[in-house]
Length: 321
Image (cartoon, rainbow, N blue to C red; front, side):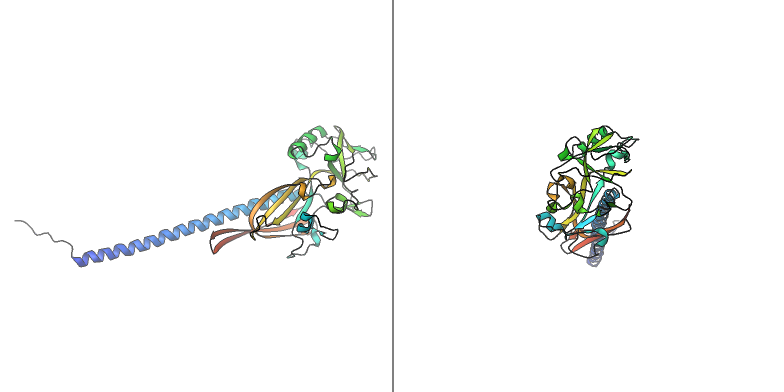
C-alpha cells in the first residue's frame, strides 16, 4: 500500500524564501563592511608607512648637518631668483605657522666617505701648526678614496682635482664665528647665490686634494680669491647642500615634499643646479623648529579613499645635533 507524500505548502516556501532573503541581506552587508574595513586599513597602513619612511629619511639627512648652516628661505623667491638678504632666517628664528619661511636648507658634512672604511677617509683633524694660506695637512686621511667616493655619489659633479667643481671645508670654531666678526651664515657660504656679487663667502673654503693627506685651498668663479683663514684643529668636509621644501608641482592645490641635493653653493650653485626628488605626495603639514641645536619637525600626509573621504597620518621627529 502506497503512502501519500506531502509537499511543502506555499506558506512554507514563502517563509523559507523570506529567511533566505534576510540571510542574504545580512551576508551582503557583512561582505561590504569587511571590504570597506580592508580598504581603510590598507590606506592607513600605506599612509603610515609612507610618512614614517619619509620622516626617517629627513631625520637621517639632518643628523649630518653642519652646525650653523641650517636655515629657512622664502622658497618661491629663491626659485625665481628674486631673493634678497631679508628672505632667509636661521631655523631657530622661524615662527611656527608662518607661510613665508617654509623650507629647511643646510650643508651636510660628508659622512659617506668618512664612514665607508674602518679608518675614516678624512680624519676631520687639521695640522694647523704647519697650515698656510695655500692649504693644510689632514693626518690619517686617505683623500684619494674621498675623491672617488664623492665623485661617484655626485655623479661626477664634484671633482677634488678641479677647483670649479670642488668640495669645501668648514673649520669648527668654538664661538661659531669666522674672523671674530662674520658669523657662519648663508651669505658667507654662498647659499644665497643672488647676492654672491656683494656677499662674503670667506667662511667656507673650496678645496682640492693636493696629496693623499693634504688639502689645497682653491678658487672658483663664485669664490675668486684665496684669502687668509683661521684654521683650527677640527674641520668638516662637505660636498653638497640640501633643501626640503613643499611645492605644488602640478598646480592642483596638493603639495608634494621635495628634496634638493647635489648642489654646491660655494661653487655658485642654486636650486636650479640641484637634483630634485619628490619624497612624498599629498603633503598636508610640514612644520619645524629648532632650540639649542635640537631640531624638531612634523610631517603629515593624506591618503584619499573616496571622493569625499581621506585618511591623514602625521609623524614627529626630533634630531639632536
